[in-house]
Each structure stands twice: as C-alpha cells, then as structure tokens.
Image (cartoon, rainbow, N blue to C red; front, side):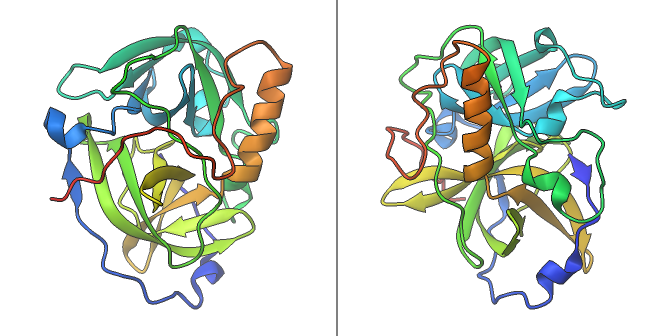
Length: 263
C-alpha cells in the first residue's frame, strides 16, 4: 500500500455521504462465510498484498504488488495466494505460475496526480484451480458512481492474520477512471477488492491502489476497473492458454455466496 499525492481538486465539492461503518475482523468461520475468495497474497522477501478470486484459476490484485522496491518485476515463484486466510489457516493455498500487470502500467511512475492509479491492476494465474464450493469467484461490475455505497474486504498492517470487512463506505469522487473512496485501508490492503451489492449479488467494482490523506483523514484510491481489466484480460489471453476465459464481466451474474456480516 502506497501513500499517493492526489489531485485534491477531485474533492472540491464532495457529496453528502452516509456514515461509514467500522472495520470488523472476520475472526470466525461463520463471519468469513462468502468471503473465502478474498485472500492474502504473500510475496517472499517483500510482504503481502490482498487479492481476490475472479475465476477458478485467476486472482486480481494491484499491479504495483508485482514489482520490487527498485521497480524490477518479481518472479511468479515468489507469490503464494492464501484464500480465506484466518489465524494461520487458509481455505485454499496456491502457488503462482504466471503474472501480468496491465500493459500500460509503469512501475515507479509519477506519484502526483492520478494517472498512476488508472492501470494499477494485475492478474495472476494459480498453479491449480480452486474448485471448492465455499470459495467462489466474484463477478466484475461496471464502475460505481459518486455517492454509491460500497464495501471492502482486506488484509493489512496489524491485521494480517484475518480479513477485515468494512460493510459500508462510499465513493467520494470519480474522475478519469479513478475512484476516491472513504474506505478504511492500511499497508497490505493494496489489491483489495471493493464490492457493491446489486440484486443480491456482491460484485467487484474496484481494486485498491493507494491511500492518501485529505483533511486529516485517510482515504483509499482505486481504478474504475472495468475497461482496464478488459484490456488486461485480452493481453493475458494473447500470451498463453491460462484459464481467463470465463471471468464474469459487464454485470453478468455468478454464483458467489458472499454476504456482508453485521457487526
């Protein structure tokens, strides 16, 4: 997770937003039910990010998680995906065989403004598909609008051993493919999926890229996701025969069973 100097003009006229809910640690199996597809992406020698299953063999995260501090690419064999990790035990653990950042993402690019965020997404191919009835891939949805209620599930600093859920936060502003959100994030939350509820189905609408401070409050920043993801999937498919063909995009419905857990 990075601090990013954002264009505060995006928040020149912030909307009236509902009160954000507090962050809740999903400490039990019942509390975690439906969120097993979110996992900790461990990176040997670096730390961890958060990632989410979007197809039985494909996970989605932030592109900057794929690069070392000197901006060199990290080899796939340094990554491990721990789906639904809680108290040292994962619902499923997989190594990574192939990784791909968005083709227009530039590691170590300008950290002022929002251009760095737009393409800060990546997909990773698991060595084996996850075909556990508890761990369902999440569908991808259209970008949310300013003022929309969203939620986030993430790992982070001082809460690395279990996922945390913020049931309700908001889109504060949206411009040029970048979302500014009131969601609570920390170091390690990079790549965390941002969810929206539609017709009883939770869909991923963004991926957390960075955090910033506005008027003394930490906010999260992410991409609008849909078009950048479509470009990324096309690039991924052209490079191999991985399992990226059945990802649910553009509002189609999957069978994910995620439910927000009331604190």
